[in-house]
Length: 556
Image (tube, rainbow, N blue to C red):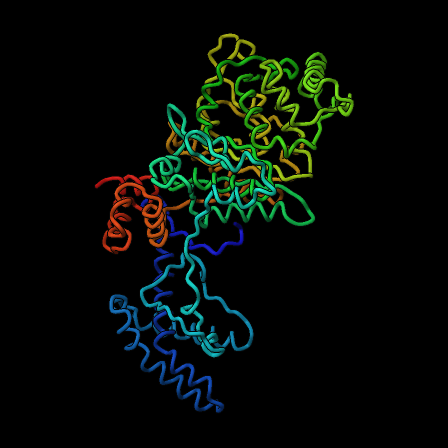
């Protein structure tokens, strides 16, 4: 995923508070179109110049290029020709093209300012099936003859089957709602849901394929993970995914989870942060860790999910009694080993001082009193091992910093003050690993960590949700704290902005809707996807956002 050639994202919308970045993109786009038109206009002349041997002849021909280039480009770009500084832009663009050709002749790739950023296919770019010659490759500095970069879809069902030799059988199946287990436990919550990408799969006529479009933002996240985890120096990455409502943050996080699991990562995925921070059934003081609190029912759920998804992956890892003493009392540890022995009928291969993580998860998923300690012990082992990379993915992360919903008399005798979620044992290691303590939050969340809290090998990926009732002030403060940590040398927090779809991505999403049979595109036999006016209209009414685009395709 980190090496896929993908279309670039468009710039931020000027109405979203970043007009300077959008203005810079528009200037770059104009220069790119002009340089492309210049290359096409001088192509034949430039090939003849390269064949010349005398310097004086070359200089005369180059002078002729400068004399006639403005009129040639004016014919190709009549709209841009109305710019007041058109002549200066064309002359400067011709200089850039010639300098890039000269650099290529010397074996040096000279990149123009901003090349590769916000790159869009222009009307001037033409496709050809002819095999380019060596000289044509030299003059093709704007990559007119290059193969166009198009969006790529990941089929979750096919990906799990292709890696059936390395993935457990669990990932090749889907749940009752048809959601692939490769993104387990992502599902449609019976009350609120966790994003619209699952709804797209439900509405599709083709139930055999479950696709996620890979985008540059997803690739950026994958690159940060690969940079930190690949190579001899195993490390960890921290990434925050941000963006406006409906741009595809949930889909981006799900794509990263699926790709990480296919790549051999152990993944703890929490897609519904809003539910977890509110509906924990009940909270009780930790029996072994003073000042902290447990959510036993949620801990049981976490144990069940991690056991189902990665039980076979963690079966070779063990937790010693010494490590378990950090999270469980001696009596609880004795109960854990007694339950293990009862389940295995006293298997002689079971060690007396340590227990495998898969069995520890099974015990935690079946006992309310042991679930929190078992889960915390498993997470502690995973975060401090270098056998397999461990990735944590948390959606709706801003909900953990909203007004609290859990309180207890041991925390506040009046039960008026709600506890921050880093006081709850099952959330504590992940919040400390991310290390974000904003200046403004719904609870008094402060840094109480000791030592290095980031896992030794893996990553923490979190995403902000704009669809939940969290104060904008809290969201802004959380993102600001992440951007502040982006400047740190050791384990910086990388902030990745998911933006609206570019025109090419909208086109391919409509192709995907037609192929899978979504909404009115199921029956129109290409009348919409192959009609440029229809595509432009759908892009306009949706604003290039995934949710409104899906809604627009459902209407007759």
